[in-house]
Amino acid sequence: MGQATVQNWRRHADFPDPVVGTGVPAKFDRSVVVAWLLAHDKIAVPAGVPSATLVLWSGEEGERRFRLDDPVVELSGDAADEDRLTGWMTDGEADVLAVLAADEGASVRRLTAPGAPPLAVPGGVRVVDRFRSGSGGLRVTLAWPAGLRGTAARQATGGLVRHAVPYSAPGEACQCARQVCGGLVPTPYCAEHGRAAEPAMEWHPADGIRCTHLSRPASAEQPA
Image 1 (cartoon, helix red, strand yellow):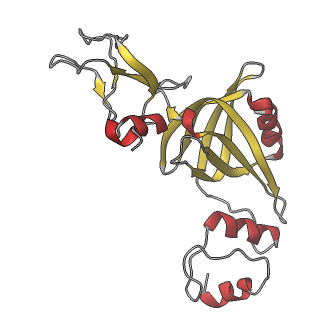
Image 2 (image 1 turned 30 degrees about the vertical axis):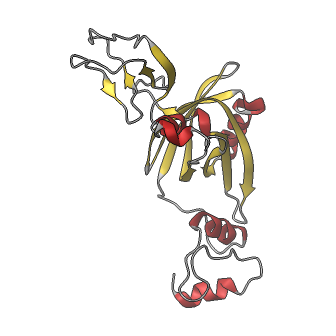
């Protein structure tokens, strides 16, 4: 859009504040501005936008696949915080999603979204917002504990890829996949570890928040 159009929007008292700069030009949070435009009937729900595929699992309802259009994935850098996923959904799918995520009883078996690696979460998924735009579109926001996030397994059934931090350094013959935190994903043809990776100090999700913590020098974790 041209600067004149944006300046007209900014005359509204409830138009979102810029995230960078205050004059012209300024930068805004895209998802927040899109929500404002939809709520004020300035635009319709976009067509042909990227989509995310979300596979949820609930012990009561089983597995269900959902599509979220124009997805926004916000991954927290703090294990004590939450990750969030927002996207446009049909009313019917949003209702099913709410049932699956009721009482945080759902897990993400696999989330595939543009710009983010496939991830999985073993529980704690819930719906935190349902936004109805002025043009009728429904945008749903999900959240889950960031500390539970891990890499999704390659299998269609999903699940977390977990790996271990062994007590001793792997030998030269080790054929397991190495991780930046010092851990490894055991492979069945590795004579040293096989599938067990024993002995291990800890199993945890691959490429997750906890891996980031484990990759820090031990002195950084010690209080002064």
